[in-house]
Length: 106
Image (cartoon, rainbow, N blue to C red; front, side):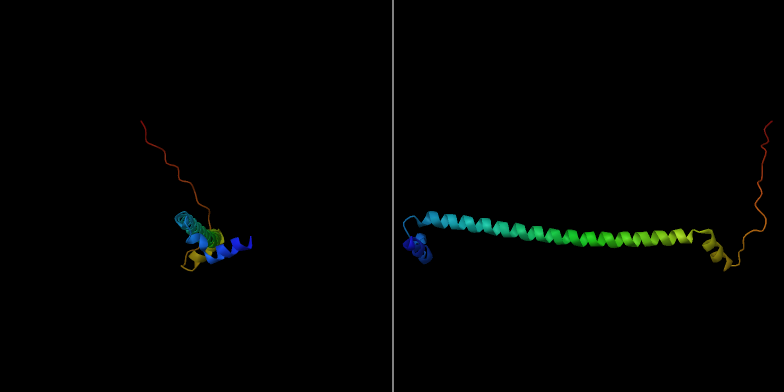
């Protein structure tokens, strides 16, 4: 058993009679390892992109809620009344009256 480990550490399996088969396996194993590493890096990159997009969605949702509340405040009658009072417009003292138009059909 000790001789087997020593021969592996010395690399005798790479120069022995059936070395091309061993080299082919090592090239194949290296190729698979490269593909696994590349796939792992790609997956990590996508996870980081997804996290960044989730943060952006949270920020945009927060901005949307803030804008919607501002618009709702601006639509209030009291806010509109103050805005037009600065321009000299005041609310009417008398309520509006309906105008009825009768059609002239013979």
